[in-house]
Amino acid sequence: MAVDAHSHETVSLAVDDYDADIETSFEDGPLLQQDEAGNWKAPAGLLWIELAIFTNVFLSGFDGTITASTYALISSDFNAANTASWLTTSYLITSTAFQPIYGRMSDIFGRKPCFYTCTISFLLGCLGCAVAQDIFLLNLMRALTGIGGGGLMTMATIINSDLIPFEKRGMYQAAQNVLHGFGSICGASFGGVIADTIGWRWCFLLQVPVSLFALVVGKFVIHLPENNVQGHSSRSIQSLWQQVDIMGSLLLILGLSVQLVGLSLGGNELPWSHPWIIASLAGSIGLLALFLVTEAKTSAVPVIPLRMLRGVQPVCIQIANVCVGASAYAFLFNLPLFFQVVLLDSASKAGARLIIPSLATPVGGFIAGIVMSRWGRLAQIVQIGAFFMLIGNLLVAFLRFNDSGWKYFVFVFPANLGQGMVYPGILFSFLAAFDHNDHAVSASTVYLIRSLGTVWGVAVTSAVVQNTLNSGLSKALSGIPDKWKVKPITYPCFEVIARLS
Image 1: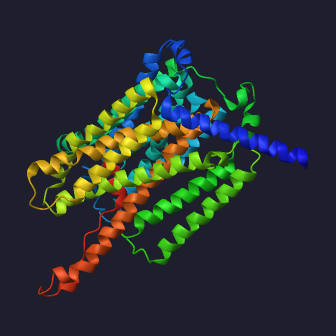
Image 2: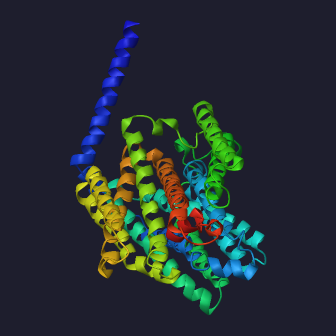
Image 3: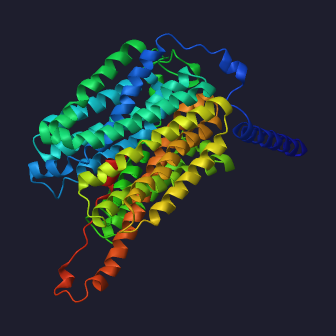
């Protein structure tokens, strides 16, 4: 027993020293030792590899916002306004649910097959949307697009983690964030123009050749190991399948899907107190609890190793990740609502108000990339970015109906700038806490938890707005006959997330 106690004390001291070293590297030093990064040389064809994966990153941002301006046209074309909200809901359910799977599957089967999977799924989904003849098939194709879309950003980050040292990777991540933001701006800006001129189907069809270009380029230039699990590249397919945590993957997908369906319907098509909503949210908790139990006991390679969710540092990083995701999208969700309902802007004008301020997001990512590459300072990047987001939210909270016009423009900048800084800061903080072999699943875990935060933020603020409107509506309409017939207009939260993601 004395030996066990001594061993336990030694391990504890080692862990404490390790955590202290990580914390010091976050605060005081670069992401890697200078000589390690200084000896790195760009692999052959790196420019073409970046072109392939960054094309997917652009498409991820473009597709996420292009449906916003075409939503009304599509629902009108199919005479299906009551079910057209699933155009965006189906995409977000599958993209969020499958996002964490790519990290572990790329460890088992290799980066290139997973790059093919997400790109081909996205391509076929867009093509299916372009030729769909009924709303059911269109929603089904959007779900297929989401399966691929959930891996576009994730696989770009994972492939770069294999090719580029940690210290050098900051600038590439910044470029990735810039392209994603630029794609989102292009989708929001040109979606309506494309739909009004040549038809909404071209909004999806135009993405097909771009996605095909990324697939073809990736086929010839991405040369990574077929299988990265513990370095055993010669394992048979049967042996690899034994490493796949099938039960954990199914439980995670089902748990997230049930939760997202409940959050989508709650407060929009059904009241939050409806038995179906309560059952879906309770069922989600049960399924995710079973997922955690499965991950702890599985003999296969877990989808999300529970050690990544233990300890003060990883837990605090993910709490910050959830809070930042919730804050960012709650902010962006309510802004168009404010512009349209309070300022009486049209949908196009409300979207146009956000185009220029949205450029602050990639600028923040570029600043974060420079700071990470030269000085590290991950903690300071997250803190400063969160501070800008706080200031931006406070400024917007003080906006009034008759304020000066410049305030509606300038007050939106700080939150977008902070978001661009804090996103890569959190990602790299979490990656730095684990070995390089865990970077794929670490990146997918960050993107998953951030996505959940965005959905929760929009759902909670949507519920607050609706409840406040319901409680104050009768007082505001006092003196109006038949005022009980007036109902507040609900905004499907997933539709607005897709508009702004």
